[in-house]
Image 1 (spheres, rainbow, N blue to C red):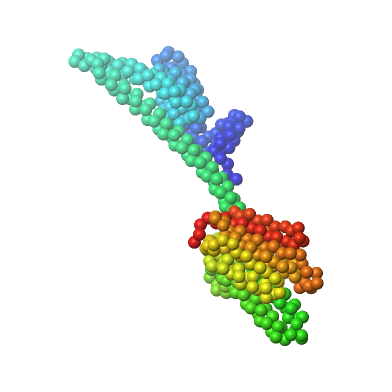
Image 2: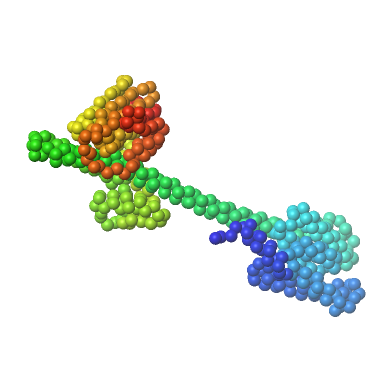
Length: 468
């Protein structure tokens, strides 16, 4: 994991506390040692003239210059000390390199700006005063015989000011620039680290949303498959049982039952084909090799079932499969499907299977959204399927009410007839769960439970936003 700027600063501070050496890189050590040696040699040579003027032994002046010049070695750790030493030795006319580098180091460091301005001002005043005094002496000695030239006029102060600014201003300005640039780079680095963390969090959230979308799509497909297959196959099984019972006794009735079984099977295949067609349209081309629509649907379904981030199935990335599933769900929601107009045919199919079903419609028929009509149809369909499975021979009443702002449906059956043999249909226990999920998804109310007469009642109310 990449360390942030704060972590690096903390690490550098901790290293400085544990060790006397404060340099972070080897080249910094080499640079500072080189500058310190050059400054010591300069101050040592300048110490010869200082010793003669101060009437002290030359070795003492040289040694003093070497010691003063070597102070530049600590410019990164104590820049204020370097600047103060350079100001102190300014009257001795030594330490010019130390003064320039010291001002630069002070301006580029994290020392408060008021200290930098104060020390830079002190250094400027010291250099200016020494320069003025030295220039007056030099001009007085050089032009002692010229009566028309006065060195105490404008010449010496102006030239001294230019020389002073030329020595002090460039290192201070350059140091301020380097310090600001360093702080900007550190800020950009910290911002980049922060953005990297935010992008990582966004990627995790996107993966969670994609996984949720895949799970939601798997649930929707399973619900549609259950509604389509369970009802049609249940009726087929009921008719097949009736066909087996009357095949020898009533050949004409057996022929009618066989035709009904064929019709049910064709309807089931048609609905399954439409559903798989929607999935094919929502599945992108995954590879350059050609693949059949059926294999594309199979690959998309298996990849969605895996739910493993970053995996693939038949060359289809899970992210693409998630997008295809979402597109398939949207296309299925917007496409045509069973509606309330088909309830009469649905009830008639149950009647042909031998179930006594009464359809009661209340209120004026209106057109609703595709999702509302499909959900209402599926609720009635699943309730009738449960009657075929669990209440053989029971009488059923299907009520549909068109109200202001909502549509309500209720399927109520009486107790099953013990004298009628059941068809032995299996039950997965997902019918009521699927109905509740469908109704809740649209913001409706779903209630189911046994009645006092020994039957069972399923009721649902769906809100209607607008008619179409």
